[in-house]
Image (cartoon, rainbow, N blue to C red; front, side, top):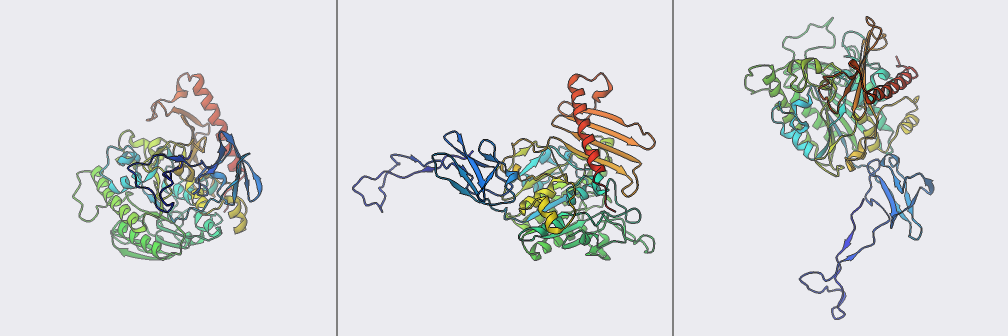
Length: 536
């Protein structure tokens, strides 16, 4: 729990005035100060568990004078996010009062593109180039070794922004500028939700958005963000390809800039412009602020950064892009300062053409295998109590939504009530408790992700879903052409490359129990999706 507080107070001799301590080589006696019965004294809302006990006797808690539930004298961090005055009582001891504080830090979410775990040394990668900025961020943060996202760009952005699974937002595949639908403006995003805090947060999305049709360039603002500048989609596209001639040479050096809905073709290395735009927002937004900075690197087109050597193949080309991206991450982190809480994650795994061991091309971006959905993810900053630690908790991209809310002292019910919106199902769990204790058991029993096409409001022609627990992973694949679903089960404890489907050859009792358990959870999720239809 809490280390004993030691008071090094030399004993008085009776001949020296009380105001002048005696000069000694060493203290003759070290007196132990009484251990407080409750703590921690500097607790942060949503981050620290509160404990209350004395001499092995668990105490009880009240909040704002009313009895508050606890287990063996402990109030979980997840129950402190709304704040209040907590009082611990143990028979025979004076009560102790704690008032957990808000996190008191801005939030920066750095979203990189198509960067697989095997490319980053801090996440066990052995194939990528040096990434000193990401490594330094990992050294002062918590790395999540079992983090999932959807296998493609747009769905991941939707889960991050809303805290909701793809089946709830209707975004299961890429959002196209010239076809289909944007994400519904009825979705509550972290851009709008944080306005509901007692002290409203400023919100911004900088860089790649990829959730709107081309005829809705102000879509991020309509979804609640105070500030948006970047691109509507990928660099080799424009918002109106039907009536506007497509400029030559679109890519990292020439691209369509979207500045709050105003479109223009600009020249200049997009990675550098993204950093400049983000740091300008950090300087000018009223604090506290939450900002997503979504880089294009290392997504296609694979343009060489200025001054990079000519590569021998696509692997080396992407390596040069990752070196440039890492430099930009370092510039951004340095610019916002060490008092900012920083999350970094990739939107999916590596592109198949450049996937490396232990993943193959068919196990990369776009697939539901680990190479497509298990991504580098970390949290760093002043709230981290054990820098450099690794958490094996099951986490997913949607959890950053609730993390932001917890930092602002909010929960879903408060957001819905203050914004006057119809309550919607969320699939987000705050990651803050892991910052104080990265070894705590996973707050989730399972993580889930999926891919389907086309996006809502059309009915899907294909739908692939997957769910994992601490050890086993279940995959279900369905299509209109093959309406009888295919099922796969993998033991990720023994088979990280997913080479052996346990259902294909006389599964043992443990595998069958895992199949049944995960199937039941999938059925529960499917029922909740049906009860929470996509708004269009």
